[in-house]
Image 1 (cartoon, rainbow, N blue to C red):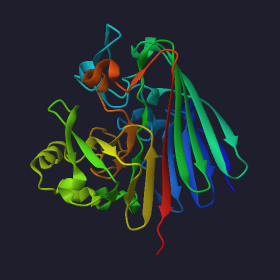
Image 2 (cartoon, rainbow, N blue to C red; image 1 turned 120 degrees about the horizontal axis):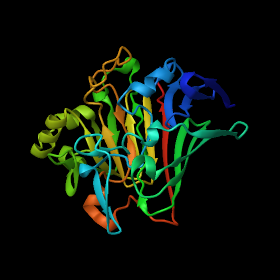
Image 3 (cartoon, rainbow, N blue to C red; image 1 turned 60 degrees about the horizontal axis):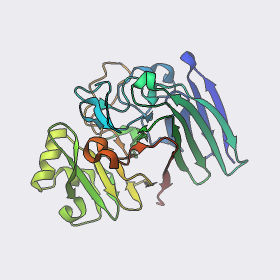
Length: 339
């Protein structure tokens, strides 16, 4: 059976708790975010339930948040669309990052809860993203649906329509850690039929065709984070040294799995890329609530290629045309390994 409970904290922040006896997952109306995912006694995502009303307003790491309009960076905060140039906030100087200061991670979403009477529970979050707030063209009516089912499968669906042709590239910035006590994730093993890593230039931005095929370089489809960090390939080594880990878009196969000795995490998405970030810098937030060390988590952010509008122009997948409906779906499933 599945159960739900809503906790109202301060500052208008609600926690929506979903429990299926074996696992508990918690979402919030602030940023349509995941706050906690606990399998029995092991929390596999980074976050803070008890102090959520303070924690998520203050921290700069986008923990568990839905981000957008545009996940990732846009070079110099500038792009051209249908013959007009737009200047966005440069909140990651000189670039624009994750939708800017008024991105959807800062929105208080309306929500409703749908219970399938045992099979799954949905939280349907809705908001309007306004051009007057974030300086992109057009307003967007946005729906984000989080579904959790009895097979410990968490699904995120995005649906959006815009009043003008605009950019839309949403993602969820969840940090996973399958180890206990937030120990470094370097032991985690990645597996996919394709693992092509897009290299970043000196502006921290990807290029279209500059990639490293990790399966070819390492000679295997399964690899630890530490294997990637110790690879002898010169280009790959230079990237890891520069960023102190991964912060890169990947092209993956039909499914990506990440595992340690206890858990297997499966990911499927219809988005073209996945940004894997190994939480390389954790000292930017001077707070007693910042308990994290570098490499204490990793993201799997399903999205279009960052800065694709400046790389591909009018062919960029992140363009949402007026009159069209955007839809995407990403699923994560946690499986406990047998002894």
